[in-house]
Amino acid sequence: MADEPRELAHFHSESGQVIGMDLPLDEHMQDKVTKGYLRRVNPDGSPWQEPVDDTEDTGSELTNGVPPRPAVNAAKAEWVGYAVNALGMDPNDAEAATKQDLIDLAK
View 1 (tube, rainbow, N blue to C red):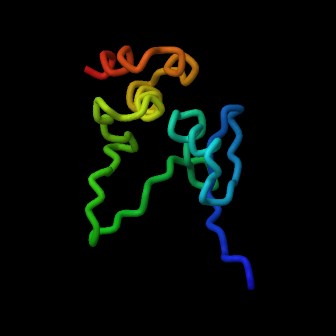
View 2: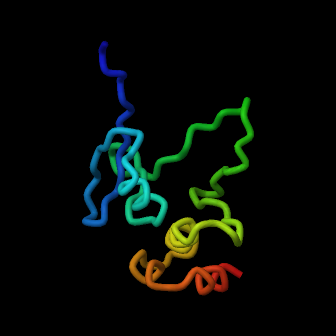
């Protein structure tokens, strides 16, 4: 049985390098993406945008590359990612804040 082909995605790492990783990401790396430590980019480092599929409405469209504001009951990791990506907060500062602090900053 042959291995299924894997999709290669590029990410801007914490060290500032563009690195390629196979999708789907493992849980640890996906958590780093969710929190904003890793940001998906094109192979040349330019901002990556999710391909638009007009046939499906996922309700999670990005606005200018920024994810929508999470629900109040969303996991803290989603709020950390929102604070980093939408509010420009440093990932370490966002991680150190409480979930309620992040919610209050987004108001």
